[in-house]
Image (cartoon, rainbow, N blue to C red; front, side, top):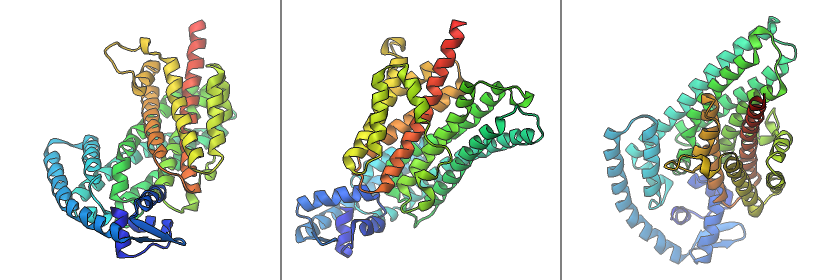
Length: 413
């Protein structure tokens, strides 16, 4: 409906033109236009898209539906406000908004529901602010370690490790600031409709940032950095993997919602995906996991909707499959859940900060892969976002599987 109403106002020069006008992601606009064309509601001449007479009638019907939906939507949100606060309100608003948005027909019409849009925007700003608070605290702690290194109080060879950690933290902060600015802007390419669709994922960001901070502090202590004691390669990996995963996670969301930004291309990552190290650890679980990982990255190297879906589904199933092997159903509480979240927490039950990090990262990525798989991927920007998600997944797997190696070695001693 949104596209029909926009085309009623004026024809579109291209899919990119129409996507920018309605503030929607390009893949979803391309897919919707194809469906509308099959129904005879729009027509294409060259690269230009126009609405047909049948499409005009459908748009008029949608306008009538909008009036009823908008009234119900506002009453729903008004009833929610007195009962909820904090991040719970974001999640509840997200569910209410998603239900209502299935009937709303235009970003411009949504914007007229001022109270709902502003409340939702405000809660997302709160989520990004909380995430940034944790990240700046992590940066302050890391600065103290960098100072100790300059004074010669750290073990030889630590500077390279600290520099990599610092770059990942800086990336997380920069991209979180950019997403916060997009959320605050009324004109940026992060419309209310897309915020509604991705809010359950962005809500994970404060928890991810908090766990990255706590995990970095815990692992830095175990490295014996301030005492100038060296560390094993395994422990170093466990220190670097979380911020690498966190930075890739935030970058993937930014790439998905911020169009045409050369500054945020996935190739700009200072630390590449640790895929070789991950495959070595996956080999210890079985060759099938290695083949799934290789197949996902091979698909991600190509363009097109089929390749994108192949990569997204393969990485999602790899993530789920690894944790199902590490924590089979029979190892979980019979009255508990057998979902991914329960498996992660059970496996890392001896590390509070590690469990928090892996839980929120795994659940957030699982949701991202599900949502990205629902789109038709028509350009390189969408593939960049997918590849960033895969880097984040590799970071989580590297941390978790290295934890498994360390635990098994400890048990055998």
